[in-house]
Length: 249
Image 1 (cartoon, helix red, strand yellow):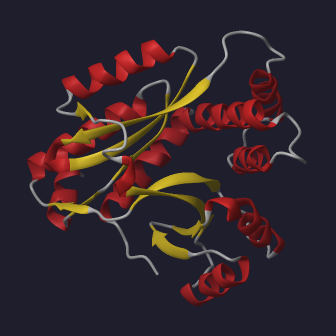
Image 2 (spheres, one colour):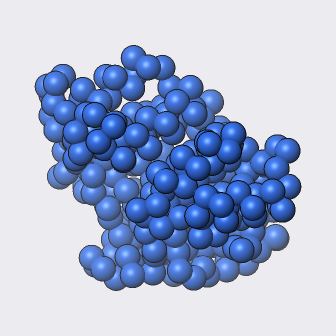
Image 3 (tube, rainbow, N blue to C red):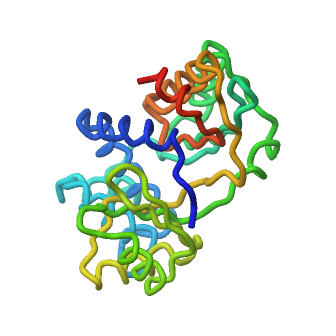
């Protein structure tokens, strides 16, 4: 099974802070709207929407917010249509980035991302020059409390997950893209409710950053991109040494 990534610990801490700031609600609502836009507003016939709704409920998103997000996606609420765009970029140290953006103004988003990259030591990459370094996979996160490695191994095998890893106080299971909902359903049948369930871009290989200054620049750029209002997810292919991770804390 996959090994532990020190940068994941840093991201996990940030995710907890983001949750307290309400950013998670906004991102979950956007995913629901996108799912409804592309597959319709009926979760019974739209697996991506079912997954998005379950993920939102796991984070205690109010039902009114979920219904509003669905109607926004199907066009019932009117307003500008939203679309999802993936930008490819490089950060210091040769780090590759995949930046998922959800926006109602493609030109504005492209200009904003370009500006953020320029101001924070990053550069746009040509289409395809970064994407090949990443694999599209399903990711399911579950609370690790009370789940031993033997137990999660058995659950992962029974549910049909490809791989799993421990990050902080969570177990993270990886699936094929078309098995994300099915694996999540089996976990729920076994009494394990995911805290997060989504498609991700997972790097095929990572580069290790040991220089504290490079680590600061890369993580600073990551945070700026992740905090951008229209940013849905940011993925990178780097890991940090213990010393570099400690310098950030």
